[in-house]
Length: 217
Image (cartoon, rainbow, N blue to C red; front, side, top):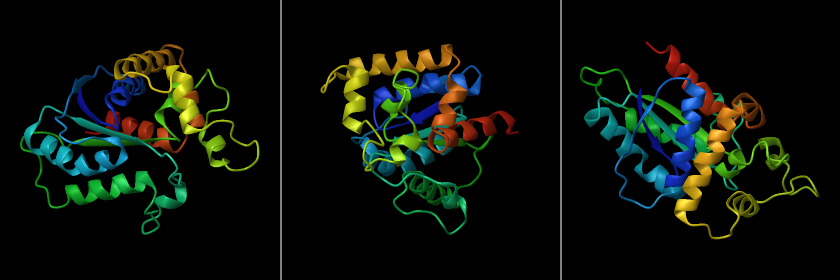
């Protein structure tokens, strides 16, 4: 299966590709979309429609698109957001779904190809929390949800990055190598199910989307 990824950085994409292969349990090949803008959250949301439409029309060999972003300090996604009409405008998972729905509206079927499958993920508060799972006992969506309460959450987004990369200003190459290494550790140590339990909404959405790919016609 050939898939494309859209994340906030190349390092995020490198690590996430390893996780996706483990979650899918299928051989996967990576297609690299050409991205013209700087990323981060705003960049991901800005290029999402053009990436989706380009894959839909021009890259018929690509069967799946995975989009993932960090929550940073935005509201966490909850089951309440799943009710039609109850989406949270500031929730980044809701925002990605809204932009995708608009981008896909009125598109004709793909010519001689299956519909493009999409899976969305949200890292709480940043993807570095996933890479630290199994090493830092505190990382979880529940812990981050309690931030602001005295002693409730012993880390910040900045401290997670420094802990995993060993530097406040890691190089891009160092970030890419560490992301791949830690994602591979999670897969090889059989921690993906536990990772989903500790990050049930953000990683859970991604895992649920990928499981649907395996059963799609």
